[in-house]
Amino acid sequence: MVVRSRAELDLLDHAAVVAFLAAEAPDYVFVAAAKVGGILANNVYRGQFIFENLTIQNNLIHGAHLAGVQRLMFLGSSCIYPKMAPQPIKEEYLLTGLLEPTNEPYAIAKIAGIKMCEAYNAQYGREYVSVMPTNLYGPNDTYDLNNSHVLPALIRKFHLAKLAHANDVVAVVRDEERYGQIPADILSSLGLARGDAGTLIKVGAPGPVLLWGTGSPRREFLYVDDLAAACVHLMESGYAGSLVNIGVGDDVTIRELAEAAQSVVGYEGEVLFDSTKPDGTPRKLLDVSLLKSLGYEAKVTLLEGIRLAYDDYLKGRAI
Image 1 (cartoon, rainbow, N blue to C red):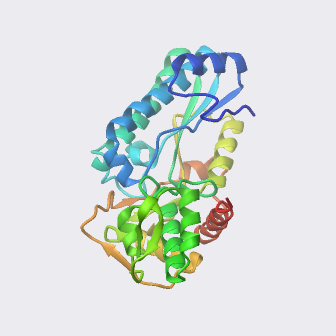
Image 2 (cartoon, helix red, strand yellow):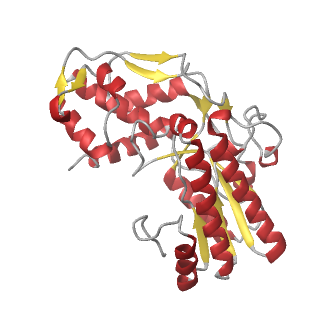
Image 3 (cartoon, rainbow, N blue to C red):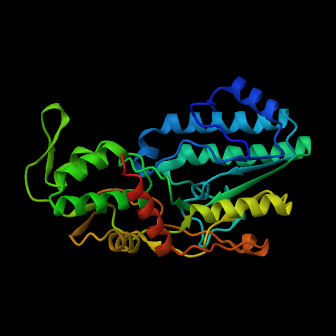
């Protein structure tokens, strides 16, 4: 397996990517790199999201073609589907309706990648497959509270609240050093403030954990190891179709997800939902009938996966 870190290979650099692929001449290419984030990041960094994702995937897909790579897998996202798509979402629902506005630039970039793979298959005889994972979580996730996805954000918010209720400011400081600065509104909810030289000080009793939206949207969550196994299975099986959903075929409400994360973390305080904040798409459940027919089914349950993710979060706190 050939890999490069972001520091070793800038995927926004067309010449560097083309040279890398030409030199390595891989048998398979998995395009998993992307500029990603949660509902806040998607909505705020709209230009950055569409530019960087288009550039990364264009460089990799075209570079693989120039290097003579016959089989490539492009990883998209379930947000490519219409906001009001029938549930569960079948692969053929792509481009049948309007997208969710908050992540439209990211979704359009991913749709372009799917169509680019289809076009290279048609013109050049390549076997470039696109797979659409549902919401992912697991080890080495992003816990930056301004940019993370919902489940890692929940894990960190509940963990910080547990520390605050235990009056363990030192542990909160260590968490911030490892996972990034805590936004002012969350610090306030923890009963903390940033003093001179950026030090954290206790200013009051911690309040409830405040979560965005109503808690009613439904989401499906796939443990990252299940995604990896599904991708390898499809690549090795020789599948050469256009688009495959990868998910678990089951979903939960955000409220139910929060309750599960709260239980795993062991936070016993109050949780409130801020209905003035956006919910996003009401429901995104993928139809995984095609994936199952091709011989793969997800194995890690949501509760088991959250436990694994939290265990990894705690290990990552060692500085």
